[in-house]
Length: 615
Ligand code: GTP
Ligand code: SPV
Ligand code: MN
Image (cartoon, rainbow, N blue to C red):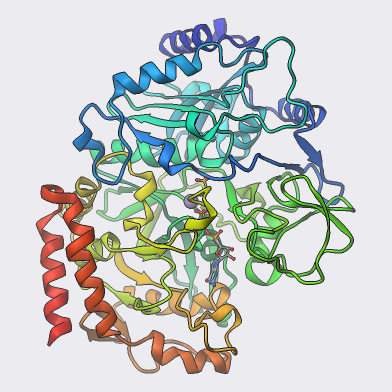
């Protein structure tokens, strides 16, 4: 099929306009077939950009440039007409100015390259919650990843209407005068990268990066930044959340979503293997949830994606076996190390590498005797990723593609907080839950910055969506309050809300691996079980100044290692002093940012928390 065969006149006109601006050598309308995938991958291998992996069927390794290893938040723009609508937490440039700048960059930017026209669907095809887009890109890597991450190609045309989301992408590296990539990842300088969203037009323009969320535009740009705007307009929720299916020993099922910032454990929680007998976790999604009210007044969630773009480092047989199996074939690896026998390796894979490794920068180095590397000298970049089809995950839920979604009983918020925040506490009400979401803080990780010096600093990341909200975060808080007041629902039907923290630290205790006071991973099932029972209204809690917490003996600790049993009282108590500091910081530094956009319900919760802590 060619551009001329595109039946939708609006899509065709937009493609033609972009072709005129970007001046690619050729244009290919993608069909999403296996043959096309193989052809594009071969092109990458021939150009020296991809390495086939002898040890994993139909799997390939890509290495990016050090300037293009993660999302670039300071180059990400919400270009609403009014600056106030982008709000205090987004970068804003007026649409006129940004478009003029970007048109200058787009002019002729695809010289020497092919423009791919990739129609795609976010969500199960035909689902009433699904949405459709078309990505134009000059990157084969992007097409290949989008093939795994979305339902793409031929199959989507019948659903594509005039309300499609146009997503324009270029790596920003024209090949003039017969120039070639010669094995070097194409992208533009940091100052020329623009990840831009025009919320009023529901339009995405991305330039200069080929990596992850900057370039696979169905993911963060569409399914979160533009979708948050659509969700507010249409009365639903687009969230940076995993979705899991939890079955208890009696065979009863509940679905739980969880919002943790980038590289804070969503993929791991979504695929965990419970350590407590009789419980089962299955995966519906690992990064994004779209939730809408069903006729029964409950919130139903779909996973808009079809694959996992997962953090590789730290993924081992022990921590996340299911992810390893999902990524054992038909997988794209990015910025992992390459072993002599043609496999990938990364820090935290669970065993030391042997012989020589090619590190993520392409340097050949002798492997270390340990499965660990000094900071800054990692063989795999800390934000190295695998792109794997979701259907290959051994614990994928049978209903993960249910068109109407799965009914949500609980929502978890969390982040990396070495102190203060306990292992788990529950909100007293929906508004209190919105308050908990609004105060989430976390250490910065390598997924959210290309500046290694920032990693580990704590920042507020309400709802884990600070980098992904397409409008004013104060209005976003209000939207959450409004969802709770939606006339089609009531308090009984709304999910219960919890705040969890797997990342409390005690660096002085040599018994604790990595200094973590909680073992995390499969052991998090102990907390999930408590949450499950809370949803059934079980008398397993105590009321504390910060909310409901497990009462003595309510958290299953059978078989938990002694060092964690010893640490448990500390991570299950209310640290009054720490919380009062938290209140002060929210009052003085966090909430004032939102000015008149901050819902009064949240200030009321803050006052209430302070009163309860001071009693
Ligand atoms: P994004 O894909 O960036 O949105 O990340 P994510 O939230 O899905 O994070 P992921 O599950 O990939 O985990 C990121 C890192 O955190 C990995 O290195 C994990 O090994 C580590 N991690 C995940 N869960 C836990 C946990 O319960 N405890 C500890 N200590 N580390 C964890
Ligand atoms: C994240 O950073 O939250 C990710 C990876 O899930 S990326 O797609 O690059 O945004
Ligand atoms: Mn994410």
